Length: 139
Image 1 (cartoon, rainbow, N blue to C red):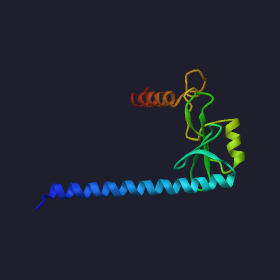
Image 2: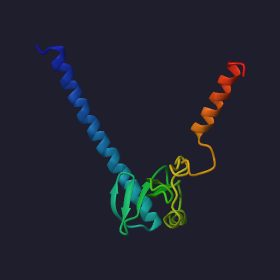
Image 3: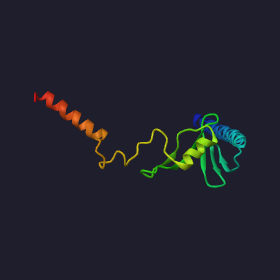
Image 4: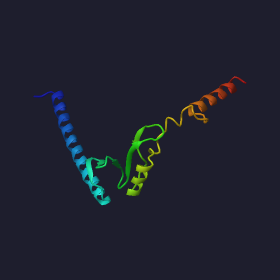
C-alpha cells in the first residue's frame, strides 16, 4: 500500500501534465486564430507565437482582444520599450509605425525628471506633508 505522499505527488504530476497539454492546445488555437486575422488583413507572418507576431520586415505586433493589435516600439522621449495603444486596422498600425508612442499607461521617465518646471508627484506630496505638519504645530 502506498502512503499519502506518494499518491498525492503522483496525482500532482498527472495534473501538471494535463495542464501543460491544455496550455499547448490553447496556444495552438490562439496561433490559428491570429493567423486567420492576419490573413484577413493581408499580412504574411514570418513568426507567430500565440498572440505575438513578427512580419517579414521585422515589425512586431501583439494581438489583443478580437481584431485589435498593438505595435512594438520604443518611446521616442525616454527610450523605454513597449507596446502602442490598441488599433483595429492597418491604418492604425501604420500610424504607430510612423509616429510611435507607448500605451496610455506609460509614465515617461524624462517627462517626470527635474529638467521640467512642473513639480513631480513626489514634490507635491512633500509640499502637502509640510503643510500638514505646519498646521499640526500651529504655524
